[in-house]
Length: 159
Image (cartoon, rainbow, N blue to C red; front, side, top):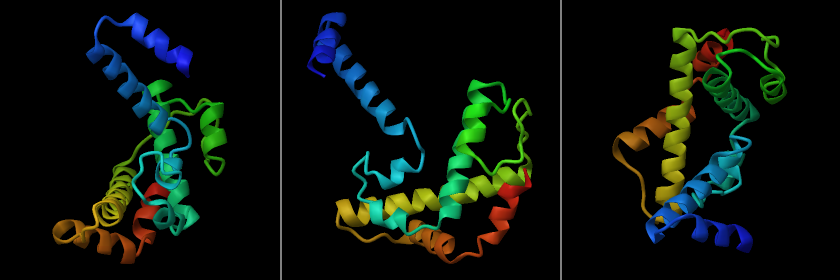
């Protein structure tokens, strides 16, 4: 680590550039790897570990699948590769298939991401700031936690 720090200092001319690079590396390290670990391994110090451990595996698996699809679309021209199949072992896609996103799939994805976002915000506000959520955030979280998830699960499974 110390050697890497020295290289950063010598590579850039000013403190601001070094700081920008260090921040970029830290952010990359937080978001790289298993997407569920963002919530469960406390990489961001959101104090959410036990909250997300209580989510059922189906939610975690769908979130992993959503991120894997995003990565295939962005990095592999929407073509399924062996990495995608390894990350999403339940997929019906075969290597070389092109990922297709239906409107229903996108609606289900949005619903899941809103729920995860509300849960994350709740953890941070409650556990880090020591405050209580209210308003639209509380409504959204309550709706997600008690909703019949079958509707958006079926949308995600559709494609």
